[in-house]
Length: 153
Image (cartoon, rainbow, N blue to C red; front, side, top):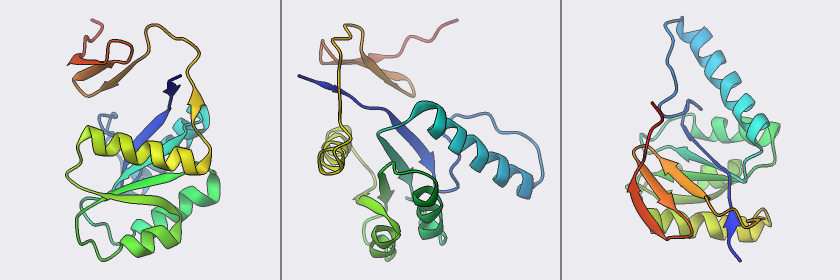
């Protein structure tokens, strides 16, 4: 039996890749980004949050702590090999750290491991059209294939 997993991908500042960026002051922008992130988490009840720390943010531990204070969702951190902060990320509450650049099989294994350990894996209820769309690629789960994503016009 397969499983369906809801994943939220975010940058170190909690912004969502490909999300609309507005022209506002940096303080307002940071507050709005964080508000939008937690609204997304609340609305979608993800099984895991993947944070891209590959730019080695100095406040990465603070970002993880703010997530851990607001929700129980496990956090997987993507960081550079040799990042001196990986131990601090784990102390702050990251379930695991993986190194950039990542490949899909490694990401998949890491997510499965975190979900197995935390008990957050969700059974798939025979959804015949289950698919994953990331950027311009679409994964058809039952066909076990990867193709260019079809965007609605």
